[in-house]
Image 1 (spheres, rainbow, N blue to C red):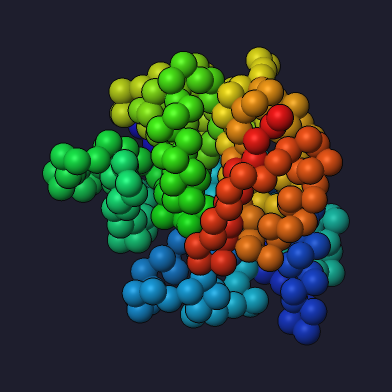
Image 2 (image 1 turned 135 degrees about the vertical axis):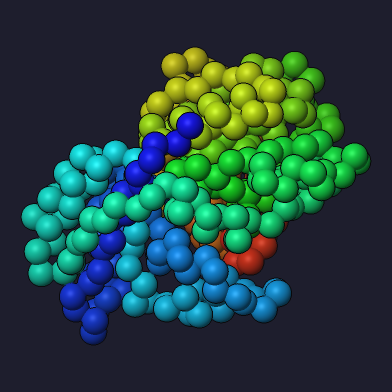
Length: 306
C-alpha cells in the first residue's frame, strides 16, 4: 500500500540569463549527495500530447525546455524539508524551493495516462491497470511505477532489456546478476525471469527499495534487495548499471570490481555523445567493449571483463 500523501519539492531558478549553469550546479550537487531521482518538470506535464516519434529534445522543448524546474517526489516530508534547507543555504542566490503535499492517488493518475505497454523480443512490460491485454508469446513483466520512476518507458531501460535478452540466450543459466540503481526493479525482475540466479538489486533510495520489493512480489520472483550502491557480496557474472554518466564515471572502478572475470558489465543512462568517454574510462578498468546501441539520443554499452 502506498502512503496517502506524496510530497513534491519544486526547485526553480532565479537567474534566467544563466539558468543552464545554475541548473547544472544544482544537479551536480544533488547527484553528489546521492539524490538521483529528480526530474525536470512536474508530473502534470505527462498529459502533454506529443506526436508519435517525437525526439527526446522535441519533448523537452515542448515541456518548457531549460525553464523547467527540477522536481523531487518523496513519501518522506522530513527528508524533503532537510533537502530544501540545504539547497537554500548552499544556493541562496540561485534557487527558490517550494514544498507541496499531493494526494498519492492523484499523483499516480499521471502515470496511468503516460504509461503505454512495451514489447521487446522476449518481454511485454505493462502496468497493473492493463493486465487483461497481455500477449501469450512474451514473458509478462508487470510494473507499478510507484515513487521510483524507472517504468521502462525510458529508452535506457529498454536498451538494457534488449542487452539482457541478447546475453540471456547464452549467459543466464546459473549466472549471478546484479542491478545497481534498480529503481522499480524492472531489470532485476527481467533477469530473474530469464533464469539468472542469484539476483541482487541495490538502490540508495528507500522508496526505490520499497517499489522494487512490491514489484518483485507482484511478478512472483525473489531476489535480494540492498539499500546502497554496491552489494555486500561479489562478484557477479552480469552487472547492470542504468545510471547517468555523471555517476557512472565515479563508480566505474567499483562496477568493474564486482563484475566477475569473463563476466559482462552493461552500462546505460549515457547520452550517445558520452559513449567514447565512457569507453576510455572502462578500458582503464580492464573492460572491453563488445556491443553498443542507441535510441532517442541515449546509449547502452556491453563490456566484457577478461
